[in-house]
Image 1 (tube, rainbow, N blue to C red):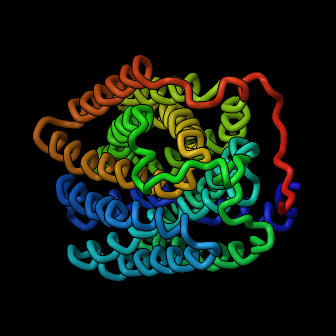
Image 2: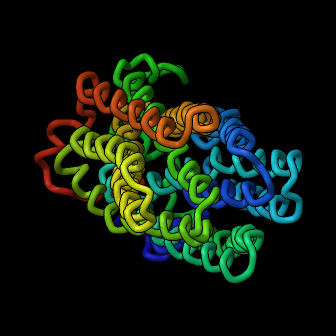
Length: 412
């Protein structure tokens, strides 16, 4: 048995109600701040602060999550910080209050995502984790579709500020859902061992997992992927906010909905195929879609076409969001360091995201939006080449030919 129905349902709806900071808040924030006279560089600096806040706490939080037998309390802490930051932005959209709010919001990224992954892994086990991760992302993106539509309508009919009240209000059902996840269904550290008997495990230091060359290659690829991806949608939002007849909030809502709808439809499929095809083929599809997206942005200014291009964002982000966590689980199997590596990866990715915002923002400021998108596409192309030539498959070969099986959850 893989967790009770109540616990699995709790995980589903926890992911549904959880606000996606990078794709749910950041694009709207860029448009919101532009309406208060913030220029591209200032917005990029603000988003960089948000990323740095997450970077500082990622690896320490990974160690903490590995050590804690009960992780549900971390959800409440992160959710309250997210809600508080959203309210601060709503009431005080000036420089220092926004910086403080983004420090609060950025810190939630080091808590919520890794904690959900850790609880999911402990509930279902490594053998079922690929499909569970796909289901997590599917519900997460479905919730973001609802949130993006709601934000767009609120921004259009009420005010841009109402979006951040909506984010704060979303904290209530999120806290309730995390209470549904039953503590009796969470088997602390059992799944990290992943069917390897404890006496057979080799004692390893906290940093020993980083001695694996595959870890370094995948880390670099992931940072480059997120560097290329992070600034694209915020820049597109700022482009439409300047001198366009389009309502920027409605346009941004349509872009986010398109992306998240594709992710919701694709995530479960990606989880299944990751167990059948392996991880690398899916990652190549993801990186290739990101490259095409950056290039296509430079070819049209038509609103409908730009929204359609966001399908590629859904393909790239949907596959990467599922498979990257599975690769980390593969590389840490039997080490007990899943959350440490997940935290370290998230920190490194946060660096890529932060640098993307400020570097791409500066390039656009001096050379224009077309040059900025070409630059980001070039980074995506380099990441694709590095993945293709230097990253091996991480799933065990025997697992590629075995049918999907659930873990037997006996206590011994």
